[in-house]
Length: 331
Image (tube, rainbow, N blue to C red; front, top):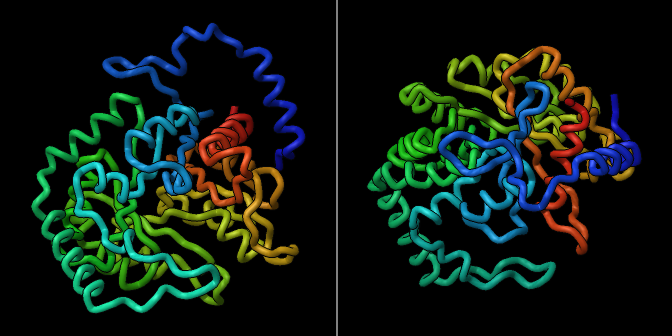
Protein backbone atom coordinates (compact mmCIF):
# COMPACT_ATOMS: atom_id res chain seq x y z
CA UNK A 1 0.00 0.00 0.00
CA UNK A 2 3.02 2.29 -0.10
CA UNK A 3 2.81 5.38 -2.29
CA UNK A 4 6.19 6.05 -3.88
CA UNK A 5 7.36 9.63 -4.19
CA UNK A 6 7.67 9.31 -7.99
CA UNK A 7 4.09 8.04 -8.28
CA UNK A 8 2.91 10.76 -5.89
CA UNK A 9 4.54 13.48 -8.01
CA UNK A 10 3.01 12.00 -11.18
CA UNK A 11 -0.43 11.93 -9.57
CA UNK A 12 -0.05 15.48 -8.28
CA UNK A 13 0.86 16.75 -11.73
CA UNK A 14 -2.10 14.95 -13.29
CA UNK A 15 -4.47 16.29 -10.66
CA UNK A 16 -3.21 19.82 -11.12
CA UNK A 17 -3.88 19.66 -14.85
CA UNK A 18 -7.59 19.13 -14.20
CA UNK A 19 -8.12 21.46 -11.23
CA UNK A 20 -7.36 24.86 -12.73
CA UNK A 21 -9.90 27.41 -11.52
CA UNK A 22 -10.18 31.16 -12.12
CA UNK A 23 -7.94 33.11 -9.75
CA UNK A 24 -10.95 35.07 -8.52
CA UNK A 25 -12.79 31.93 -7.40
CA UNK A 26 -12.89 31.30 -3.64
CA UNK A 27 -10.83 28.33 -2.49
CA UNK A 28 -12.25 25.45 -0.51
CA UNK A 29 -15.79 24.99 0.75
CA UNK A 30 -18.06 27.77 1.88
CA UNK A 31 -19.12 27.41 5.49
CA UNK A 32 -22.21 29.33 6.53
CA UNK A 33 -21.38 32.31 8.70
CA UNK A 34 -17.62 32.05 8.16
CA UNK A 35 -14.86 32.81 5.70
CA UNK A 36 -14.03 30.48 2.83
CA UNK A 37 -12.00 27.58 4.11
CA UNK A 38 -10.69 24.17 3.22
CA UNK A 39 -11.96 20.81 4.38
CA UNK A 40 -9.17 18.30 4.98
CA UNK A 41 -11.46 15.39 5.76
CA UNK A 42 -10.73 12.89 3.00
CA UNK A 43 -12.76 9.71 2.68
CA UNK A 44 -14.00 10.14 6.24
CA UNK A 45 -10.48 10.51 7.70
CA UNK A 46 -9.69 13.87 9.30
CA UNK A 47 -6.24 15.02 8.26
CA UNK A 48 -4.72 17.82 10.30
CA UNK A 49 -1.36 19.00 11.59
CA UNK A 50 0.30 19.77 14.87
CA UNK A 51 1.34 23.40 14.70
CA UNK A 52 4.81 22.36 15.91
CA UNK A 53 5.30 21.57 12.21
CA UNK A 54 5.68 25.33 11.60
CA UNK A 55 8.20 26.01 14.37
CA UNK A 56 10.67 27.39 11.79
CA UNK A 57 8.10 29.95 10.58
CA UNK A 58 6.94 33.20 12.21
CA UNK A 59 4.58 32.36 15.07
CA UNK A 60 1.27 33.74 16.30
CA UNK A 61 -2.25 32.43 15.82
CA UNK A 62 -2.87 34.82 12.91
CA UNK A 63 0.03 33.16 11.09
CA UNK A 64 -1.18 29.69 12.07
CA UNK A 65 -4.55 30.44 10.47
CA UNK A 66 -2.72 31.67 7.37
CA UNK A 67 -0.62 28.50 7.25
CA UNK A 68 -3.72 26.31 7.60
CA UNK A 69 -5.33 28.08 4.67
CA UNK A 70 -2.19 27.69 2.57
CA UNK A 71 -2.01 23.98 3.44
CA UNK A 72 -5.75 23.40 2.91
CA UNK A 73 -6.15 22.23 6.51
CA UNK A 74 -9.29 22.40 8.60
CA UNK A 75 -8.02 20.68 11.76
CA UNK A 76 -5.06 21.21 14.08
CA UNK A 77 -3.39 20.22 17.31
CA UNK A 78 -2.46 23.64 18.64
CA UNK A 79 0.80 24.25 20.52
CA UNK A 80 -0.08 26.45 23.48
CA UNK A 81 2.77 28.96 23.16
CA UNK A 82 1.21 30.79 20.24
CA UNK A 83 -2.15 30.89 21.99
CA UNK A 84 -0.78 32.25 25.26
CA UNK A 85 1.29 34.88 23.45
CA UNK A 86 -1.84 36.08 21.67
CA UNK A 87 -3.70 36.19 24.97
CA UNK A 88 -1.02 38.42 26.51
CA UNK A 89 1.11 36.07 28.62
CA UNK A 90 4.20 37.62 30.25
CA UNK A 91 7.35 37.45 28.13
CA UNK A 92 9.80 34.69 28.96
CA UNK A 93 13.19 36.18 29.97
CA UNK A 94 14.91 32.97 28.85
CA UNK A 95 14.33 34.06 25.25
CA UNK A 96 16.52 37.11 25.79
CA UNK A 97 19.36 35.24 27.49
CA UNK A 98 22.53 34.58 25.53
CA UNK A 99 22.49 31.52 23.32
CA UNK A 100 25.22 28.93 23.93
CA UNK A 101 28.23 29.00 21.59
CA UNK A 102 28.19 26.57 18.69
CA UNK A 103 28.78 23.09 20.07
CA UNK A 104 28.98 24.43 23.61
CA UNK A 105 26.82 24.64 26.69
CA UNK A 106 24.68 27.54 27.82
CA UNK A 107 26.62 29.75 30.27
CA UNK A 108 25.71 29.29 33.91
CA UNK A 109 22.93 31.63 34.96
CA UNK A 110 23.75 34.59 37.14
CA UNK A 111 21.82 35.19 40.37
CA UNK A 112 20.01 38.03 38.60
CA UNK A 113 18.93 35.69 35.81
CA UNK A 114 17.74 33.07 38.28
CA UNK A 115 15.71 35.73 40.06
CA UNK A 116 14.23 36.90 36.75
CA UNK A 117 13.17 33.36 35.87
CA UNK A 118 11.61 32.79 39.29
CA UNK A 119 9.67 36.04 38.95
CA UNK A 120 8.55 35.10 35.46
CA UNK A 121 7.26 31.71 36.63
CA UNK A 122 5.23 33.34 39.39
CA UNK A 123 3.93 36.09 37.09
CA UNK A 124 2.94 33.52 34.49
CA UNK A 125 1.11 31.43 37.08
CA UNK A 126 -0.85 34.44 38.31
CA UNK A 127 -1.65 35.46 34.73
CA UNK A 128 -2.93 31.99 33.89
CA UNK A 129 -5.16 31.49 36.91
CA UNK A 130 -6.72 34.96 36.56
CA UNK A 131 -7.24 34.96 32.77
CA UNK A 132 -10.91 35.45 31.80
CA UNK A 133 -12.08 32.66 29.53
CA UNK A 134 -13.89 35.28 27.46
CA UNK A 135 -10.48 36.23 26.03
CA UNK A 136 -9.84 32.63 25.05
CA UNK A 137 -13.24 32.47 23.38
CA UNK A 138 -12.29 35.52 21.31
CA UNK A 139 -9.22 33.64 20.08
CA UNK A 140 -11.39 30.67 19.20
CA UNK A 141 -13.61 32.88 17.03
CA UNK A 142 -10.62 33.63 14.79
CA UNK A 143 -10.25 29.91 14.07
CA UNK A 144 -14.00 29.35 13.79
CA UNK A 145 -14.31 32.13 11.25
CA UNK A 146 -11.58 30.48 9.19
CA UNK A 147 -13.27 27.07 9.40
CA UNK A 148 -10.44 25.56 11.46
CA UNK A 149 -11.21 23.21 14.34
CA UNK A 150 -8.84 22.61 17.24
CA UNK A 151 -9.07 19.09 18.66
CA UNK A 152 -6.09 19.26 21.07
CA UNK A 153 -4.21 22.06 22.80
CA UNK A 154 -0.73 20.89 23.77
CA UNK A 155 -0.18 22.73 27.03
CA UNK A 156 2.05 19.96 28.44
CA UNK A 157 0.93 20.96 31.96
CA UNK A 158 1.90 17.88 34.00
CA UNK A 159 4.61 19.79 35.89
CA UNK A 160 2.47 22.84 36.54
CA UNK A 161 0.68 23.75 39.74
CA UNK A 162 -2.83 22.39 40.31
CA UNK A 163 -4.31 25.83 39.60
CA UNK A 164 -2.47 26.09 36.29
CA UNK A 165 -3.47 22.56 35.37
CA UNK A 166 -7.09 23.52 35.85
CA UNK A 167 -6.52 26.61 33.68
CA UNK A 168 -5.09 24.43 30.88
CA UNK A 169 -8.23 22.32 30.66
CA UNK A 170 -10.56 25.32 30.94
CA UNK A 171 -8.68 27.15 28.19
CA UNK A 172 -8.57 24.10 25.93
CA UNK A 173 -12.31 23.63 26.34
CA UNK A 174 -12.89 27.30 25.53
CA UNK A 175 -10.89 26.76 22.31
CA UNK A 176 -13.24 23.93 21.35
CA UNK A 177 -10.68 21.18 21.98
CA UNK A 178 -11.57 17.75 23.32
CA UNK A 179 -8.43 17.40 25.40
CA UNK A 180 -5.04 18.56 26.59
CA UNK A 181 -1.89 16.69 25.63
CA UNK A 182 1.48 16.01 27.23
CA UNK A 183 4.28 13.46 26.97
CA UNK A 184 3.48 10.01 28.34
CA UNK A 185 4.69 9.11 31.81
CA UNK A 186 3.25 7.61 34.98
CA UNK A 187 3.34 10.85 37.00
CA UNK A 188 1.84 12.89 34.16
CA UNK A 189 -1.01 10.44 33.62
CA UNK A 190 -1.92 10.24 37.30
CA UNK A 191 -1.84 14.01 37.72
CA UNK A 192 -3.77 14.97 34.59
CA UNK A 193 -6.44 12.26 34.54
CA UNK A 194 -8.54 13.55 37.48
CA UNK A 195 -8.52 17.09 36.10
CA UNK A 196 -9.61 15.81 32.69
CA UNK A 197 -12.46 13.90 34.35
CA UNK A 198 -13.50 17.02 36.24
CA UNK A 199 -13.83 18.99 33.01
CA UNK A 200 -15.38 16.20 30.94
CA UNK A 201 -12.33 16.16 28.67
CA UNK A 202 -9.43 13.90 27.75
CA UNK A 203 -5.86 13.81 29.00
CA UNK A 204 -3.99 12.79 25.85
CA UNK A 205 -0.46 11.39 25.88
CA UNK A 206 2.18 11.32 23.16
CA UNK A 207 4.84 8.63 22.79
CA UNK A 208 8.35 8.82 21.45
CA UNK A 209 10.46 5.65 21.48
CA UNK A 210 9.05 4.04 24.63
CA UNK A 211 7.74 1.02 22.72
CA UNK A 212 11.33 0.00 21.99
CA UNK A 213 11.78 -0.56 25.75
CA UNK A 214 11.07 -4.21 26.66
CA UNK A 215 7.82 -4.56 28.54
CA UNK A 216 6.40 -1.15 27.67
CA UNK A 217 2.62 -1.12 27.30
CA UNK A 218 -0.22 1.36 27.14
CA UNK A 219 -2.27 -0.80 29.51
CA UNK A 220 -1.13 0.62 32.90
CA UNK A 221 -1.76 4.17 31.71
CA UNK A 222 -5.17 3.43 30.25
CA UNK A 223 -6.21 1.68 33.46
CA UNK A 224 -5.86 4.93 35.42
CA UNK A 225 -8.99 6.51 33.96
CA UNK A 226 -11.32 6.36 30.96
CA UNK A 227 -10.35 10.01 30.46
CA UNK A 228 -6.83 8.92 29.48
CA UNK A 229 -6.38 8.72 25.71
CA UNK A 230 -3.36 8.34 23.46
CA UNK A 231 -1.77 10.48 20.80
CA UNK A 232 -0.04 7.60 19.03
CA UNK A 233 3.06 8.68 17.13
CA UNK A 234 3.18 6.10 14.35
CA UNK A 235 6.50 7.43 13.07
CA UNK A 236 8.36 7.22 16.37
CA UNK A 237 6.84 3.78 16.95
CA UNK A 238 7.96 2.35 13.62
CA UNK A 239 11.31 4.11 13.58
CA UNK A 240 12.29 2.67 16.95
CA UNK A 241 10.72 -0.81 16.72
CA UNK A 242 10.29 -1.66 13.03
CA UNK A 243 6.84 -3.03 13.90
CA UNK A 244 3.85 -2.13 11.75
CA UNK A 245 1.90 0.70 13.47
CA UNK A 246 -1.40 -0.99 12.69
CA UNK A 247 -0.65 -3.60 15.35
CA UNK A 248 -1.08 -0.88 17.97
CA UNK A 249 -3.88 0.98 16.20
CA UNK A 250 -6.00 -2.16 15.82
CA UNK A 251 -5.54 -3.12 19.47
CA UNK A 252 -6.09 0.31 21.00
CA UNK A 253 -8.21 2.12 18.41
CA UNK A 254 -10.90 2.98 20.96
CA UNK A 255 -8.30 4.65 23.20
CA UNK A 256 -6.30 6.42 20.49
CA UNK A 257 -7.56 9.96 20.09
CA UNK A 258 -5.09 11.05 17.44
CA UNK A 259 -2.10 9.84 15.44
CA UNK A 260 1.04 11.73 14.51
CA UNK A 261 2.10 10.91 10.97
CA UNK A 262 5.68 11.18 9.71
CA UNK A 263 7.99 9.16 7.51
CA UNK A 264 11.17 7.56 8.88
CA UNK A 265 13.62 4.79 8.31
CA UNK A 266 13.32 1.70 10.49
CA UNK A 267 15.70 0.60 13.25
CA UNK A 268 17.68 -1.73 10.94
CA UNK A 269 18.24 0.79 8.17
CA UNK A 270 21.29 3.02 7.95
CA UNK A 271 20.77 5.68 9.14
CA UNK A 272 18.32 4.18 11.63
CA UNK A 273 15.15 5.90 12.81
CA UNK A 274 15.86 8.96 10.66
CA UNK A 275 13.23 11.45 9.52
CA UNK A 276 12.53 11.33 5.78
CA UNK A 277 10.55 13.22 3.18
CA UNK A 278 7.17 11.52 2.90
CA UNK A 279 7.42 8.63 0.46
CA UNK A 280 11.18 8.24 0.89
CA UNK A 281 11.08 6.46 4.25
CA UNK A 282 9.66 3.14 5.39
CA UNK A 283 6.68 4.07 7.57
CA UNK A 284 3.55 2.45 6.03
CA UNK A 285 1.56 5.69 6.05
CA UNK A 286 -0.91 4.42 3.45
CA UNK A 287 -1.66 1.29 5.49
CA UNK A 288 -2.41 3.41 8.55
CA UNK A 289 -4.73 5.80 6.74
CA UNK A 290 -6.56 3.11 4.81
CA UNK A 291 -7.15 1.06 7.96
CA UNK A 292 -8.77 4.05 9.66
CA UNK A 293 -10.80 4.78 6.55
CA UNK A 294 -11.99 1.17 6.26
CA UNK A 295 -12.92 0.85 9.92
CA UNK A 296 -14.38 4.38 10.10
CA UNK A 297 -12.62 5.01 13.38
CA UNK A 298 -12.91 8.64 14.57
CA UNK A 299 -9.16 9.10 14.99
CA UNK A 300 -7.56 12.43 14.07
CA UNK A 301 -4.51 12.00 11.84
CA UNK A 302 -2.05 14.87 12.23
CA UNK A 303 1.01 15.65 10.15
CA UNK A 304 4.08 16.30 12.27
CA UNK A 305 6.70 17.77 9.96
CA UNK A 306 10.11 16.76 11.27
CA UNK A 307 12.31 16.11 8.24
CA UNK A 308 14.84 18.70 7.11
CA UNK A 309 13.32 21.49 5.05
CA UNK A 310 15.57 22.51 2.19
CA UNK A 311 16.52 26.19 1.71
CA UNK A 312 14.38 26.48 -1.42
CA UNK A 313 11.25 25.42 0.44
CA UNK A 314 9.61 26.12 3.80
CA UNK A 315 7.60 24.25 6.41
CA UNK A 316 4.25 25.41 5.06
CA UNK A 317 5.00 24.21 1.53
CA UNK A 318 6.21 20.86 2.86
CA UNK A 319 3.13 20.44 5.06
CA UNK A 320 0.91 21.19 2.08
CA UNK A 321 2.72 18.43 0.15
CA UNK A 322 2.05 16.01 3.03
CA UNK A 323 -1.63 16.95 3.02
CA UNK A 324 -1.82 16.18 -0.69
CA UNK A 325 0.05 12.91 -0.14
CA UNK A 326 -2.57 11.84 2.41
CA UNK A 327 -5.43 13.05 0.21
CA UNK A 328 -4.29 10.93 -2.73
CA UNK A 329 -4.20 7.86 -0.53
CA UNK A 330 -7.69 8.42 0.83
CA UNK A 331 -9.73 9.66 -2.13
